[in-house]
Picture 1 (tube, one colour):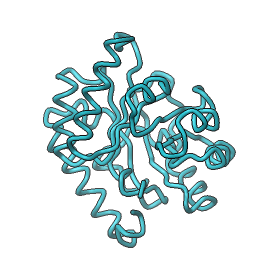
Picture 2 (cartoon, one colour):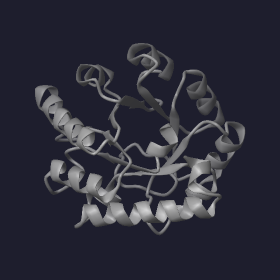
Picture 3 (cartoon, rainbow, N blue to C red):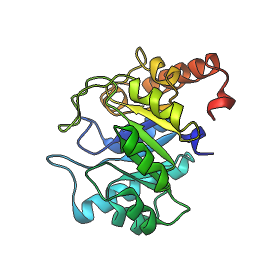
Picture 4 (cartoon, rainbow, N blue to C red):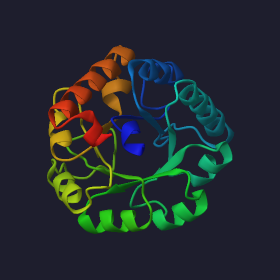
Length: 223
């Protein structure tokens, strides 16, 4: 079930860490991330063949640890690699068109910021939606104004069967409100990618998430 895989959703590209990104990814996998999204964007990001080869290595690591491998925005790359799924934002291809391209068996995630966008994502067959930024973030240059957990609560109330992942400025210290608001997990970049010990950071985050979900009514309710 997809909710099981969304508790600790790690997002990273080759430009998001000062260390070897493949080493960071494997340490994060060892620490307990439950899903990985390759988001290869920004200045100095890999292109063409280099991007393909890097994505292939990331996917192999994810398969080794039985964690879903999602590609941000690049549907052609996801299909070429036979990745587990694709995540798109509101500025990318429409969710309905992406669903047509990838078929019904692959995971489709969509970033949403309003009830209307969540409605369209659900109708397009999204497996989950990402809502944020919950808190301020410096990673995404085009990030919107932090919205807290209000929209998470609203979408969770209107679409109780649509898995929600909170994203934006999340850490071990501030993730709980996302889960209390109805999110089934959190997505983050720098808390793990910039950590001196990615394995330990992932492990602590995973433990905090599971502890909170149990308090909110048991992992089974969110899994």
